[in-house]
Image (cartoon, rainbow over all chains, first blue to last red; front, top):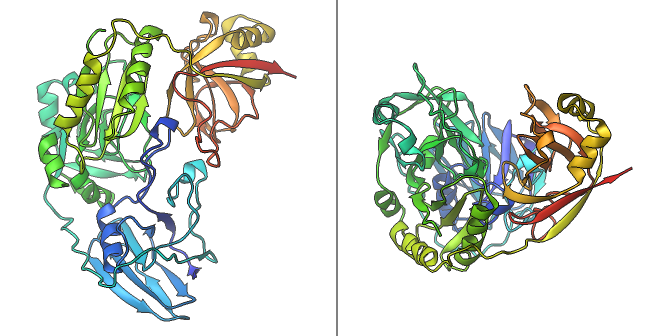
Length: 278
Length: 213
């Protein structure tokens, strides 16, 4: 068991979420940064999809009631600790990015709902970790040899996108401006979506669009012209035109950008985006 | 069948769009193609909407070219007219005492009893499930009950609230913000994670509301 003498301001248990329930209106949910959660799991010998702690805003403290091997990963941090029963671990405050992850050898063993241990607060699935909680450690098959995390760099110059289903509703000049604009991540950003802002807004097409399916990474342009990138807890459908979509390989880079951080977009192709994650 | 348009939706999904907007004929196509595509091994998840079908896949296992070829083959084998399939039927009991019922009556020039009779007096099609888990867009409501959304949304609409807006009706699955006109409430759970199929309604189902005291 792991008990929580001091919970971070925002902390949840996440795995890779629900990938088969969009037809029920369930978002994928799950970790915001699958790079960091996979790296932390690798470092303790877990399967890369094991449930982990995800936290933001502040640090916290955990108390281990038994021996355990843990790894903490995220931008600027890649560290393993061997914990003895009775010891406390300090969860650092995220500073170089938004989210940090802690994996424990054997996995976090909270109950599954519909096949996932992820937390989706809007539907009351799971809850934010509070001071005083106790969380069980699982017995997932682990490899004896732990591996390095091998986190890729988060400060890559660009976030790559592919054209969205409604790209053609935007005149070419507007599309070029969308790609050229030095965007900043707005404060109005959370697990549902990241707003991008800049000096002059995009001109949103006046088209009256029927709601249609969306995806994680889709960039919608609402009437005010400030794009919204749908993130892990984002809605499964939307009625705003989707000008583009952030590619899977670059979503962790965007997910870890703090409010006010710059985002430079660059267009690529579906074939290239898919080759990057093979 | 009018051949629809295929576009990538990000690097892990594709969207099929039929021309022509909202019609039960188009929605018939969407549903019949969805039923066939669902059987393709590489398909991870499917979402249908009024005139679109999105197919989600794992790009580590299959690329866009391959899956779109498989989907094109399904589309080419489609019959000339959509098969008429009746979805499942549900009756949802409603207590019509919503906070906006009198306001809706005033705006539409009807009595509250007429609003209730017209809302509960027909079958609705489930066009789309989304926006929130278990939220179903039901249409079409009686022409006399077509109202735009409220000018400002409520920060919290109670779970189970039955509401109308923009010619559609729906039931709030959770307590969430919302801008629709609240006309009643139901005890039926629109989303229950303890069920194998957590959402009560699927796209293509048919729904009727029944007034209860």
